[in-house]
Image 1 (cartoon, rainbow, N blue to C red):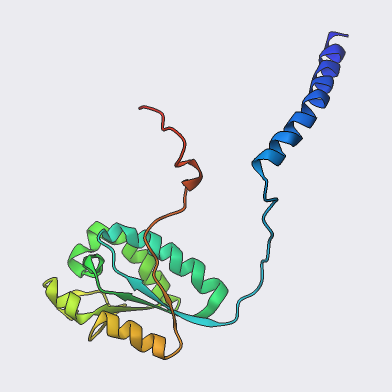
Image 2 (image 1 turned 60 degrees about the vertical axis):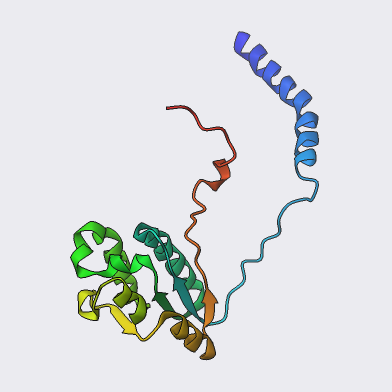
Length: 175
């Protein structure tokens, strides 16, 4: 009998609070709800402009390239011309092995990795210092412009992840 009373009380409470919840929901969504348009994309070739201070940010680049290549179905090219290029040096393989292996797997899947010769030399490297899935080109920005002249769409993958962005505005618990 007591469990029936509790169930009845819970049901009555939910009926009383339902209008309040609906009113709160409408107040929080004055513009309605987002629409969904999960359309297909035509085949599009893209060039990614990679210039990251921290080589570890190439983990995010990996995700961007992988998530772009699948729906676009075109040829993907990454042009690297910044401090991140040290990740591709054979001498740093042990330090960056995880990400190098992931990027090499993208190369095996058809993604081209091109490196600016000017940046390479300014950093004190030679083309022979780099892993075999890298192609050294004369210069990074001209390579990007060249690919754009061939119809490639430019993508500047700023290295910010959206993972957990929903919670950025919430106060962090003290550790």
